[in-house]
Length: 285
Image (cartoon, rainbow, N blue to C red; front, side, top):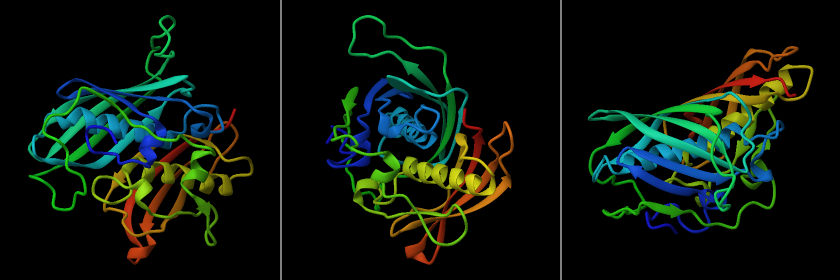
């Protein structure tokens, strides 16, 4: 477990192996290796995994600005211009607006060389861009399951076993009976955020998978590669399974991947709507 108290041992974020560095209050960097289990069909890190990376860097960048308050992600937008293939992918986040009840952050995501090597490291221009809005929750949240220490380290790393299979399989995301492209995911502690609900990046990943499946079912060819995500968080996913309901706005066509809107509902809470994900695809190369 890192010095922040989150994530705990045996957690999804630990298996991603995130290396976190606080540059200054309001600025942070989070790195991860682009392992085969996290890659999509275009050879780049999946959009949902990148959304997890920027969600974490946003939270880390904001930690030193909120004192005893807590944060909850309200929305997240990710646009991927080119596949991020690594070997290391780095998100650089910065708070661009600080209000009484909200924080707005931006992050660039970069392909980097291997930081363990003395030579050859560095970064190209950003290949993806993200923005996030966090709701500031006054005081110590009564629903949080984690105590964050007052003095945070400048650097820490999440430790885990890594993945022995593709990340979609590791999270037990599966196709369900019903509308074409509908998917389901169980809820358990491995995926929890500090409020005991599904972590925001995992919800973005579920939305990516559901959107790609819906677009693939609507088109004549293979599933498109998801490049852009616009995620709005409405309620916490606590019970599960989380199930998708998708609407295709533009079916895939030659040279285009189409677009869809995905609603993620908590089937264990009377299909409570928790998250809306707008998905844009690109034709696989």
